Amino acid sequence: MLQCNFIVASQPSDSSEAGDLWHNLTVPHTASRGPGRPPAAKAAETRERILQAAREVFSELGYNAATFQAIAVRSDLTRPAINHYFQSKRLLYQEVVAHTNAVVVRAGVEKARSEPTLLKKLSAFFSIAIQAESNDRSVAAFLVTSVLEAQRHPELVQDDHDPLANSRAFVAWAVGDAIERGELTAVTDVPALVEMLVAVMWGMGFYAGCVGSHKELEAVVAQLELMMANKLWTLSE
Image (tube, rainbow, N blue to C red):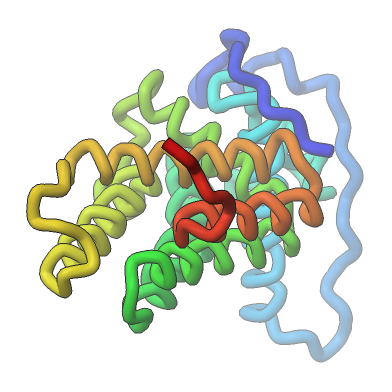
């Protein structure tokens, strides 16, 4: 199980990673490309391996403590191979953020846009998140830790690929659409409702990446949907 470490130790930056600290470490080499295999396909596969390994290392160690050497070991590549595809840790991290944002947040938003109600929009968004979590739990863990890293390292944030900003914009749009259609009253405190739903989303992300199993996550989402539909319980005065 992946661990979400929120106390991050200081480690050498990209410029210092090339120091003597790593010269005595060895990592396994991958097999050479088989005959007839297109170089472009091999490059795409290698790049995907690096992104996968980097997502796991960043989510487990944090940005400061993660190193190219650790990512090389996790991906079963050499450190120079990592440098061939990504010239700095910052560029690699930003690529992982963009890739993870695309497969979860943006994919969830696209699926949700065609749904007719606020609840169904949110359910569609959660379904994409659950699917991504079932395929790779490091996805949820990385997304959660990326929000914390953005507070520590604002220079890492790219507006187009900011998962928190993108999810907040989606919720704001969904709530506004619900008000226009009469699903929510015009006196709804929109900013407060948006932030509440964002908090729920990212709380679920933390649960998915760091706490519960996939089966437990599915059950929690189902209960959340019942509660939002006012079908979970009957409250008396």
